[in-house]
Length: 124
Image 1 (cartoon, rainbow, N blue to C red):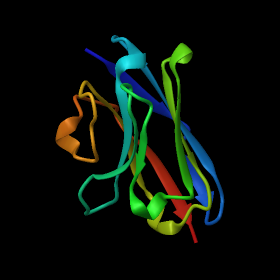
Image 2: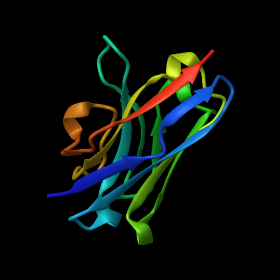
Image 3: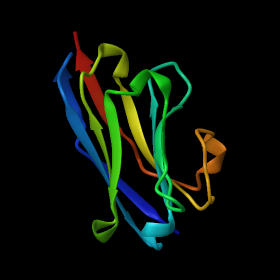
């Protein structure tokens, strides 16, 4: 079993930045693919980014490309999401997720472990 704990959310003005962190425990972190998802009120949970444990490859959802950066520190069992140029439409609860798959995509069903979520609010 893997436990995931997110931190770093909050309220920021449009154009600002936030960095989310997610600390994992309970499994070999370096081999676990780690992703970020988000869910806005009244909407489905959607994929944001993934960094794979198998080869370090990274994928982003189109609307965050060039603004968000996912990274990981295996020594700290932590995955980060640096969010720049934030927009009001980025407002959502952000979830950290872990996958045992070799090459997970943005499909929620590819992820086995989930954090409790953290609120990010971007004001206009």
